[in-house]
Image (cartoon, rainbow over all chains, first blue to last red; front, side, top):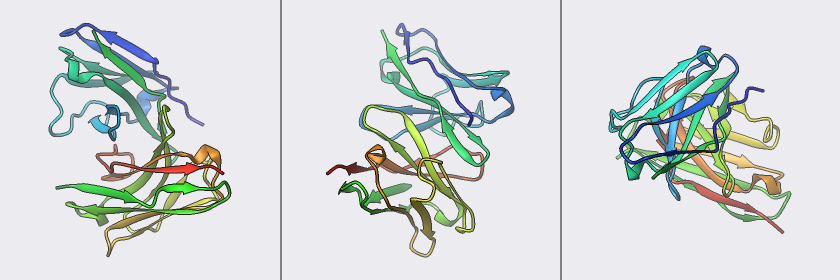
Length: 106
Length: 119
Protein backbone atom coordinates (compact mmCIF):
# COMPACT_ATOMS: atom_id res chain seq x y z
CA UNK A 1 0.00 0.00 0.00
CA UNK A 2 1.08 3.56 -0.66
CA UNK A 3 2.68 5.46 2.22
CA UNK A 4 3.23 9.15 2.93
CA UNK A 5 5.97 10.33 5.28
CA UNK A 6 5.86 13.63 7.17
CA UNK A 7 8.18 15.00 9.87
CA UNK A 8 6.62 14.74 13.33
CA UNK A 9 7.25 18.39 14.10
CA UNK A 10 8.42 21.62 12.54
CA UNK A 11 9.23 24.88 14.30
CA UNK A 12 9.26 28.36 12.79
CA UNK A 13 9.96 31.81 14.18
CA UNK A 14 7.11 34.28 14.12
CA UNK A 15 7.05 36.02 10.75
CA UNK A 16 9.37 33.55 9.08
CA UNK A 17 8.69 30.79 6.53
CA UNK A 18 7.81 27.20 7.43
CA UNK A 19 8.10 24.27 5.05
CA UNK A 20 6.36 20.96 5.77
CA UNK A 21 7.32 18.05 3.54
CA UNK A 22 5.36 14.99 2.49
CA UNK A 23 7.37 12.14 1.02
CA UNK A 24 6.06 9.33 -1.14
CA UNK A 25 7.22 7.14 -4.01
CA UNK A 26 6.89 9.26 -7.16
CA UNK A 27 4.39 11.49 -5.36
CA UNK A 28 4.88 14.03 -8.15
CA UNK A 29 2.68 11.83 -10.33
CA UNK A 30 -0.17 12.11 -7.82
CA UNK A 31 -2.41 14.97 -6.72
CA UNK A 32 -1.71 16.17 -3.17
CA UNK A 33 -4.07 17.88 -0.77
CA UNK A 34 -3.15 19.54 2.55
CA UNK A 35 -5.21 19.99 5.72
CA UNK A 36 -4.82 22.07 8.85
CA UNK A 37 -6.24 20.75 12.12
CA UNK A 38 -6.33 22.71 15.36
CA UNK A 39 -6.97 20.99 18.71
CA UNK A 40 -10.56 19.87 19.16
CA UNK A 41 -11.54 20.91 15.65
CA UNK A 42 -12.23 19.19 12.36
CA UNK A 43 -9.57 19.44 9.65
CA UNK A 44 -9.69 22.28 7.12
CA UNK A 45 -8.52 22.00 3.52
CA UNK A 46 -5.75 24.57 2.93
CA UNK A 47 -4.26 23.40 -0.40
CA UNK A 48 -5.90 21.19 -3.03
CA UNK A 49 -4.52 19.64 -6.21
CA UNK A 50 -0.92 20.43 -5.25
CA UNK A 51 -0.99 24.23 -5.53
CA UNK A 52 -4.53 25.62 -5.21
CA UNK A 53 -5.94 27.55 -2.24
CA UNK A 54 -9.64 27.26 -1.34
CA UNK A 55 -11.59 30.44 -0.84
CA UNK A 56 -10.74 32.02 2.49
CA UNK A 57 -7.26 30.51 2.83
CA UNK A 58 -4.57 33.22 3.03
CA UNK A 59 -2.08 33.64 0.18
CA UNK A 60 0.63 32.88 2.76
CA UNK A 61 -0.19 29.20 2.22
CA UNK A 62 1.28 27.61 -0.90
CA UNK A 63 2.09 24.14 -2.18
CA UNK A 64 4.38 22.34 -4.58
CA UNK A 65 4.82 18.75 -5.71
CA UNK A 66 7.64 17.15 -7.66
CA UNK A 67 9.57 13.90 -7.70
CA UNK A 68 9.27 12.14 -4.36
CA UNK A 69 8.33 15.18 -2.24
CA UNK A 70 5.38 17.51 -1.89
CA UNK A 71 5.77 20.64 0.22
CA UNK A 72 3.42 22.95 2.07
CA UNK A 73 4.95 26.37 2.60
CA UNK A 74 3.61 28.89 5.10
CA UNK A 75 5.06 32.38 4.68
CA UNK A 76 5.09 35.07 7.36
CA UNK A 77 4.03 32.53 9.97
CA UNK A 78 1.55 33.70 12.59
CA UNK A 79 0.67 32.33 16.01
CA UNK A 80 -2.68 31.25 14.61
CA UNK A 81 -0.91 28.90 12.18
CA UNK A 82 0.06 26.58 15.05
CA UNK A 83 -1.70 23.32 14.23
CA UNK A 84 -1.26 19.81 12.89
CA UNK A 85 -0.89 19.58 9.12
CA UNK A 86 -1.68 16.49 7.04
CA UNK A 87 -0.95 15.69 3.40
CA UNK A 88 -3.29 13.35 1.52
CA UNK A 89 -3.44 11.56 -1.83
CA UNK A 90 -5.69 9.06 -3.58
CA UNK A 91 -4.15 5.70 -4.48
CA UNK A 92 -6.26 3.11 -6.32
CA UNK A 93 -9.53 4.56 -5.00
CA UNK A 94 -8.13 4.56 -1.46
CA UNK A 95 -7.49 7.67 0.57
CA UNK A 96 -4.02 7.92 2.12
CA UNK A 97 -2.99 10.46 4.76
CA UNK A 98 0.47 11.29 5.97
CA UNK A 99 1.11 10.85 9.67
CA UNK A 100 0.80 14.58 10.34
CA UNK A 101 3.21 17.35 11.29
CA UNK A 102 2.85 19.52 14.37
CA UNK A 103 3.80 23.12 13.56
CA UNK A 104 5.08 25.30 16.40
CA UNK A 105 5.41 29.06 15.94
CA UNK A 106 8.10 30.41 18.26
CA UNK B 1 -24.36 27.65 5.55
CA UNK B 2 -22.61 24.52 4.35
CA UNK B 3 -22.88 21.95 7.11
CA UNK B 4 -22.37 18.26 7.90
CA UNK B 5 -23.69 16.99 11.23
CA UNK B 6 -22.78 13.49 12.42
CA UNK B 7 -24.73 11.47 14.96
CA UNK B 8 -24.95 7.92 16.24
CA UNK B 9 -21.66 7.57 18.05
CA UNK B 10 -21.40 6.18 21.54
CA UNK B 11 -20.18 3.34 23.71
CA UNK B 12 -20.41 -0.20 22.34
CA UNK B 13 -18.97 -3.53 23.44
CA UNK B 14 -16.42 -5.37 21.30
CA UNK B 15 -18.27 -7.31 18.63
CA UNK B 16 -21.19 -4.90 18.72
CA UNK B 17 -22.70 -2.65 16.06
CA UNK B 18 -23.38 1.03 15.53
CA UNK B 19 -24.91 3.06 12.72
CA UNK B 20 -23.51 6.52 12.14
CA UNK B 21 -25.47 9.18 10.26
CA UNK B 22 -24.34 12.42 8.66
CA UNK B 23 -26.92 15.05 7.76
CA UNK B 24 -25.94 17.50 5.03
CA UNK B 25 -27.27 20.98 4.41
CA UNK B 26 -26.33 24.17 2.57
CA UNK B 27 -24.98 22.47 -0.56
CA UNK B 28 -26.13 20.06 -3.26
CA UNK B 29 -25.46 16.78 -1.47
CA UNK B 30 -26.17 14.62 -4.53
CA UNK B 31 -23.27 16.16 -6.45
CA UNK B 32 -20.65 15.28 -3.84
CA UNK B 33 -18.71 12.08 -3.25
CA UNK B 34 -18.95 11.38 0.48
CA UNK B 35 -16.49 9.76 2.85
CA UNK B 36 -15.85 8.68 6.40
CA UNK B 37 -12.50 9.58 7.96
CA UNK B 38 -11.55 8.66 11.52
CA UNK B 39 -9.03 9.76 14.12
CA UNK B 40 -8.11 7.73 17.17
CA UNK B 41 -7.35 9.77 20.32
CA UNK B 42 -4.00 11.54 19.89
CA UNK B 43 -3.42 9.96 16.48
CA UNK B 44 -3.60 11.00 12.84
CA UNK B 45 -6.33 10.97 10.23
CA UNK B 46 -7.29 7.69 8.57
CA UNK B 47 -9.57 7.35 5.56
CA UNK B 48 -12.28 4.71 6.13
CA UNK B 49 -14.69 4.59 3.21
CA UNK B 50 -16.20 6.49 0.29
CA UNK B 51 -19.32 6.45 -1.85
CA UNK B 52 -19.90 8.16 -5.18
CA UNK B 53 -22.67 10.59 -6.12
CA UNK B 54 -25.49 8.13 -6.54
CA UNK B 55 -24.30 5.28 -4.34
CA UNK B 56 -23.40 2.97 -7.22
CA UNK B 57 -19.73 2.74 -6.24
CA UNK B 58 -18.13 2.26 -2.82
CA UNK B 59 -14.65 1.61 -1.45
CA UNK B 60 -13.24 0.69 1.95
CA UNK B 61 -9.97 0.66 3.83
CA UNK B 62 -8.66 -2.87 4.32
CA UNK B 63 -9.06 -2.50 8.09
CA UNK B 64 -12.86 -2.21 7.84
CA UNK B 65 -13.65 -4.18 4.66
CA UNK B 66 -16.34 -6.77 5.31
CA UNK B 67 -17.36 -5.16 8.61
CA UNK B 68 -18.47 -1.64 7.62
CA UNK B 69 -21.01 -0.58 4.98
CA UNK B 70 -21.33 2.95 3.63
CA UNK B 71 -24.58 4.14 2.07
CA UNK B 72 -26.42 7.34 1.26
CA UNK B 73 -29.97 8.64 0.80
CA UNK B 74 -29.89 11.64 -1.52
CA UNK B 75 -33.58 12.31 -0.94
CA UNK B 76 -32.81 12.79 2.75
CA UNK B 77 -29.38 14.41 2.22
CA UNK B 78 -27.90 11.85 4.59
CA UNK B 79 -24.81 9.64 4.63
CA UNK B 80 -24.59 6.47 6.72
CA UNK B 81 -21.96 4.10 8.05
CA UNK B 82 -23.09 0.74 9.38
CA UNK B 83 -20.36 -0.57 11.65
CA UNK B 84 -20.45 -4.27 12.64
CA UNK B 85 -18.08 -6.52 14.56
CA UNK B 86 -16.51 -3.51 16.24
CA UNK B 87 -13.02 -3.82 17.69
CA UNK B 88 -11.00 -1.80 20.17
CA UNK B 89 -8.98 -0.38 17.27
CA UNK B 90 -12.14 1.15 15.77
CA UNK B 91 -12.36 3.54 18.71
CA UNK B 92 -12.02 7.03 17.23
CA UNK B 93 -13.73 10.25 16.28
CA UNK B 94 -15.46 9.51 13.00
CA UNK B 95 -15.83 12.43 10.59
CA UNK B 96 -17.96 12.56 7.49
CA UNK B 97 -16.42 14.60 4.71
CA UNK B 98 -17.21 15.51 1.13
CA UNK B 99 -15.24 15.85 -2.10
CA UNK B 100 -16.44 17.40 -5.34
CA UNK B 101 -15.26 14.40 -7.29
CA UNK B 102 -12.83 11.54 -7.53
CA UNK B 103 -9.26 12.61 -6.66
CA UNK B 104 -10.37 15.87 -5.04
CA UNK B 105 -9.62 17.10 -1.53
CA UNK B 106 -12.08 16.96 1.35
CA UNK B 107 -13.52 20.47 1.27
CA UNK B 108 -16.45 19.88 3.62
CA UNK B 109 -16.10 18.26 7.07
CA UNK B 110 -18.47 17.50 9.91
CA UNK B 111 -17.57 18.06 13.56
CA UNK B 112 -17.16 14.33 14.18
CA UNK B 113 -18.83 11.74 16.40
CA UNK B 114 -16.94 9.61 18.91
CA UNK B 115 -17.14 5.83 18.81
CA UNK B 116 -15.92 4.09 21.96
CA UNK B 117 -15.42 0.33 21.92
CA UNK B 118 -15.01 -1.10 25.38
CA UNK B 119 -16.41 -3.79 27.63
